[in-house]
Length: 212
Image: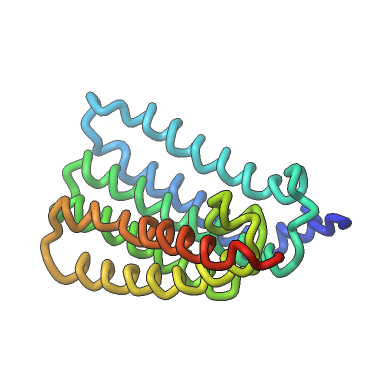
């Protein structure tokens, strides 16, 4: 299958523009907040590492559909959720790095656990919404080996997981904004993945005799 991923055209799409916007916002946040950070916390090193992580991640997600060994699987249907997930990554990274800068500059007074839960919940909500329309592929989604060889189980697992991940996202956001969060609530963010794992095993066994 021919790969129609055009780098020049991608830079005109909203997902690239959103990603670049939040990378630029990280630079702006850094210049505003970092000077007030404790010198012992090495603000320059933090800036280099965090900015480098965002730029390298950006290059990887932009170039991957063009040069991946699985690039022939990047149909337009799979590119749509890929773009959404990748652009949301830079939104999340920006808020994580901003939170850390505010924390170490003593400009933040709320529980770090609330922020961790909120970031996790927003990520789960985004992925859950993506799962509702995702088609079978080896690039995006749950990559358990027993699913990749069973198309019907793959589809069913992702549709069930979509509701679970969306529910967790909404509940996590409500809890994170509404009450004090403890470490057990944060650890509960592993539950959607665990439930999806168990669901995938059950459905793969159920549909194992179906020719995919």
